[in-house]
Length: 542
Picture (cartoon, one colour):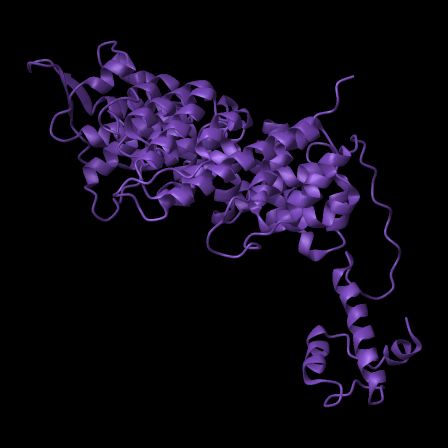
């Protein structure tokens, strides 16, 4: 630091806005305190701005002298390969909107590749270079979807940093083993004290971490203070039992059915209905079964529905909400709740031993079909029943995109989530071949990454057909973005033929060919970049 700066250090304000104002006005009009006019004042101002810049960029905010912190813990994981470290720095340096608005051109969206990079690095067990930890924490702070993978990769040194910078305190609540969750299941006394004295966010993190390690211990911890918790807190704590839900949770959930809060009762009932062998599921099976029967007097066996005429106290105790939403009939509202909470195995026994596919194919009298099938869709998702999901989805080549049971694409996406990844990809590929891409965007989002070969081919072929037809490329920007992140990198070679600007049909959108060419070039560039990323993370063969 120069003598001039040293002399001004005590008098020049450490306020960035003040420095900026002085610079804008000029030192001739606004002379810094302690400096004379002329070149000396300008030099002092620049020196002070440089010092303030360093302070603003420091990992630890300036403050009174205090005891030196303990050194950061060692990270025992192997160091990241040099090429992969350079790639990570490049991905972290990219910022949304850095390239400006408008046309994207052929450049890949690097921030969208960061989640895949982190997943691959975590799968290989690498440790990050210490120098990138601040940027990694900043990225996780700005994007909650990145946090689990980013904090797992960042490791113990990131938690050490987070204790020094309030901007990164989220890491102490979110990271496995960080902050409140570090004692879960390992220090009984610390766990008990934190549960009784911690902040709400700390208690949620503690319960979630303990539930993942020891479900019974987490349940007992919650039961110990259940009666004294606020209703909104009970609801959040109860939600943590979804992880590792099992028959041992039934007694606690049964007691929660008598809770003062309607929302708590409804959540407890929902969790119990996901346990087909629970007493509540049995009670719901009896109620729902009494509402549905097969009418064999008609030419074709037909399902008939007699919805409940009242919502009694026992139904309300089991989580049935009595007041229907605006625009819904009370009886259909009550019936839907009963049908979605009954074990799906009930229906085969109730309806003559028919399979799920045969039951779904039966006609339903008096316009009850959509209500009944929608309830079965919710039950199949809640109970993770693949056989019922297949029946409700129907064949992907069915003429109606809505399917025999699912009444919306959102419901179909949820049903697909109950199938294994290979079957899911095959079904969506068949759907695209029949209905095209415009109906398939939601369905693509539930498919495993990278997409299986049949699904990848179906997406590329559909994009090629849309390009040749002169369609607006902007209509497919969402699917193209998914393809950049989800298509198998090995498919890049198949796309080379699509890079040229196509001949535009007479009725094509003006300039569409150029946009399509750019989009495919960006897709190919991104796929090759993803392949390079994976190669950099793979250790060389011995």
